[in-house]
Image (cartoon, rainbow, N blue to C red):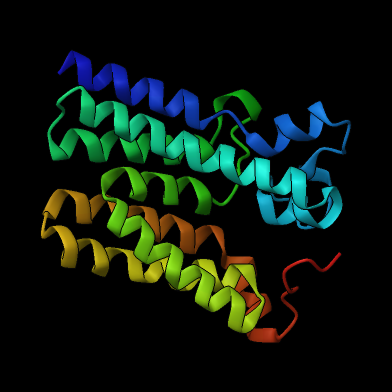
Length: 196
């Protein structure tokens, strides 16, 4: 129990490290929360910081979801413990203690968690995101489709109630964090990938 609680706390703290804000500071770029959509994530950084920085932000956000889950699995935590650790990292990204609890939308960090739980699950979500992104060129639509699919694919691949519940909770948070994007999609005003 103490090991699980410790890893949950460490996962939240790791998740609280905003890759977008840190990278923008390192490369003397504006705070992503004051630019574009105001979201500290890779898609927004791509708009004003370019592909190189955006890729580093994306990698950082994925890793902070992946690493805690792999550590939890290596430490021998149960499925419930691993799910809690992954969810804590995800919540850290959404509500980072180091940045006034104003975080990103969690797509990349959620992907890292899913990859840690099962590489096949993570790969399936990547394929869905890429297919939607290539067809429609709208990052939020790709993310929403992948998020909505994730609980069903988790159950299909793992048939584990705890893991499915954790993924369902992450999907619900992702949908809530994209409420403005959903409104823009309905109005036809959502920007396409790479647009300034």
